Length: 283
Image (cartoon, rainbow, N blue to C red):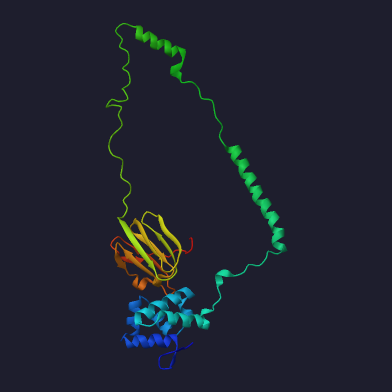
């Protein structure tokens, strides 16, 4: 995979990236630090070992960012990569499904009958165990004898009638006016801005467990979110996403994995730490 340079010299993607890096006086480690990648990923780009970088979208994102960092042409390198045999890898997400055989058809009816049987058994159990209404006896103080005793007591001289219950508006019956207990404390509100230079899958939740963003975002898009800190950020193509918290840049640094993904926990001050890994795409 070669391209014609200015003096008629044929040079590949890796050679052009290496020459541009050396022209700027950068070592391999310095270039990796500038790109927020590990040195092995940068070396794989210069050696054109694209299979070590993961999916095609990650390779294109790394090529674009590396070319911009060393002054190369991202468009030319993307064109060279498209013409290379490395770009024609099979798409494992579109594996054709075979038609169900006769064995599946024979098993479908017994499985359906089993499900219906469980549903009927559950309905019968619910009907048999559901409690019915029971008769409640009258209170003892509402009998005629009790009523006549109460009348005789009121007719006896010198007997004071019982005091009426306190009025609903009196201080004795008024419920407590103390304020309700405060809700559990949550972190301060934070504004997170995401800028996508290439397509990336993303999932973001705030400190209250609310999902703020979820799905595949196209390159050239921007998103601005508000939520309670800390924010849980999961990126499928972290090198292609620029993060800003309350206007300040957030740098994942070494928390970006070799495949380009990142699981980040960002607090209200913009500090980044590694979050527990989660299953992507609707986990």
